[in-house]
Length: 364
Image (cartoon, rainbow, N blue to C red):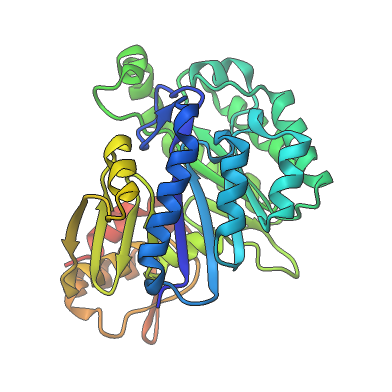
């Protein structure tokens, strides 16, 4: 039985130009009906879940933009879990919201900071300003949160290495327990790529140097580089994202809500991304329309390699030989990009910098 649950709350105040997640702008009149649908879907699928969960993750969208009474009802109805994470945009975090989240069992918050530079936030079409981020952070601390994560983006049009260094410095000054640092990915054909195409091309050439700057700054300040884009403070507690670790380690997980993905017992399915259809089907007591994708064993093994090598822990390769290219493995070992020890495999620090390219080379 799966021990990891994801719930998608798609509502946002507005849609940022670079975003390609399943989101819905506004629709405050439908928030309660959507939570009704989520809870109905949870009831229909409850038998897939263990009695006690390891993780629950509310992602979006902007979960904390959801109408407060609907959000409270959802949180108060969810099964218990060791780690309960809610994503939040800083401008939505009030003192009252922070206290409500804590009271209802949330013990980890992921703040969508993206940058502390006002002109870069404007490029990203973000509402929050640096002062907004700091207020949200202190509201969460005052409410008793001791596990806060920041999302940062690099490769933003107009960003310089000095801008990125300043963003990292501002984040380190606040000392969150966790940082996720992502390169900007703007999908072709979006209004963002039309507006910033040439600058995005220039930034793409600088991504490796930006990545090196991120790793150097964070590991040099006591953060563990435990996954390609993720860092946690080192110390007595394990502050890695347990929910995301479940994905990277190939654990089964159940996803609820529009566009949500589930992977359970060799099958993957994705819910319809259409809000009206989702609400209507569940209001009638039926599961929403889904795209089903059976996962052959070789696909599961390839995913195990691709995701497992993102981590700083050794990947056990027993049983994975058929999807690994033996000659590529020997070559990459000689080049100092992979480290083989017995039946385990890890990427070296330099191999991790090259990341996906090394992993793609390894796969037969």
